[in-house]
Image 1 (cartoon, rainbow, N blue to C red):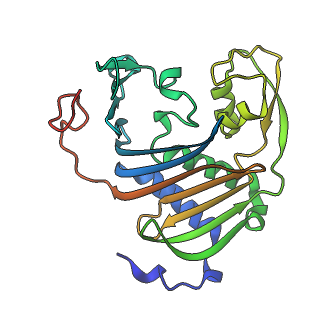
Image 2: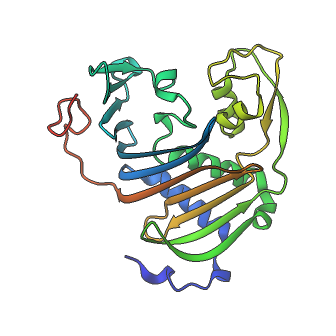
Length: 269
């Protein structure tokens, strides 16, 4: 453990450099193993999820365990579908589209965003969009122990956060628009009461409301050893939008060669 950063006075920290270092660390990751606690605002209040995750980035391989449910997705196999073992009827393995309604439901993100890459791309875009004004909106809040790890705490405040409008183009849907604008598609659903969910059909020329940034405020807890965001709290003008907490994080662990196959000894597919 490198203790050299632990005693730095908070005024000596360059927030942009710290964020860029985090983004680089995300891109350097080969594999991850962690427990994830999620809080997300939904239609009927806040939803809470807990899962255990194993992930290899390239080629992407993913195993998730959620209260008896097992999910396995590996790049280039199973017709791009996830193998799912339910914990309730029909008790048989299912092959499901990660972008489909059965797997998405009221959740903010899909299994495609599991890991740190998606959030890293959001932070990269924020750095680019803020430009020279980044230091005005980003505050280093010192060192703090979070999720039982020594962390740097950073708060990103965006006083210009607001709703704006977007004109739908050909072949666009809520997810493609959200990825294009680097915003959350669930926030777009919330801003447009006529949209029932992610799967509403949009027509070219249709005007919808969208946020102009991903969030009004983001609080980051960056692990001082791994330089990875093990705590993320996202707020909009209504309050807490989503929160992600990573526990028992292992970076680049050694996986058994069968750990991303349905026949692995600890799985029950």
